[in-house]
Image 1 (tube, one colour):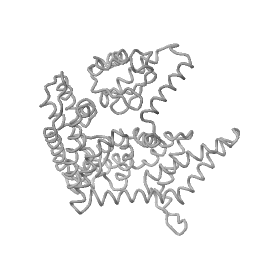
Image 2 (cartoon, rainbow, N blue to C red):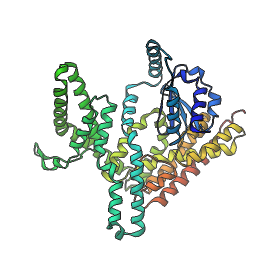
Image 3 (cartoon, one colour):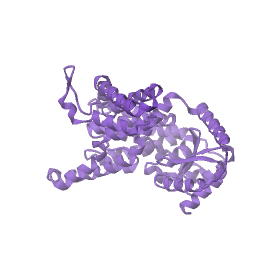
Image 4 (tube, helix red, strand yellow):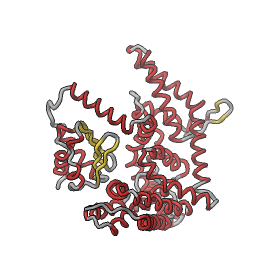
Length: 458
């Protein structure tokens, strides 16, 4: 089927284009907001062409197609539904929006989760850049290991390194713009300006209250803090400043107050948080104490999937970005990635033991995607519905995480998982990373075989 045909089939199975309020895509999912969810032909949709899984979350119907594919299918869906004319009057649309809002609020709408969602959404547009720049850096790292120091001094190595570090050289500006958009600023470029000021080399020549200022101190954490303040100042000013003066007073006061507060209070706070995170990671996952390092890897790997299920994993994205920016790599990502790898092992065990042909087919179809780091089909289609295999995968991730932490495996970029993450491994530890992958597969498989599961009736 063509992408257009897949999109039309999807629309038909969710109740027609008149039943769709909006369609958006993320990295792997087509997220549909519907008027009437009872019209969805769920059993047929789950088996539809190119569909890897279907999830109801955050008040949406989320259809998993995988990276790349989902963008094309969602684009075709939008083309079809945007041709609707006079489907509803404004009162009906407002009613639908109100009902949808109440459903989301009752299910999963908490201040903490909303804040974490905004935090994660700040980095989502940057993920393709993290991946591309990370892969370039990985090529440079591999070439450096293979050809030695002589290669690192060549013009080619320097140009490749320049390309690879591109997103990280202006990360504060990009994060500032995205954070301002997510937190409701009407001047998103203000966030970029604030990020640029906090990372400006001119800060190194300024002494404030007897302390030399440090460019980029606190990394993206400081940027997010100052953008939050700027959004608060901007919104407060718009309530009191006359419209005729808004263009002049609001940006001027917002910028001035935010910068001064950042330099005096927020950047030191961000620096303390960033330094603390770096210290904790260094003293746990990177600890010279094998026991501390391994225990940290076990706990982090085993708890990551439950963290994902609650949405709390959004808070880890700026930590990865900050570690990469300050240290050059994140040792946390390979540990957490073992959760998806252990899912592969657990699903393989389910595939071997189950007598249910549909479950066997679902597991088989999801295994290849799982190996590539796309875990949703296995999580939502195999391990989570069965219960015990999901627990087994968490335990398997703990075993894999212990290996990653023991060998202090780090990644130079974020955005990919599974075997493709091997290309982003720092310091020539790709082979060690692959050992961790194998351990995760085996442990997920073994724990599933030990715990077993109740095989559903065909």
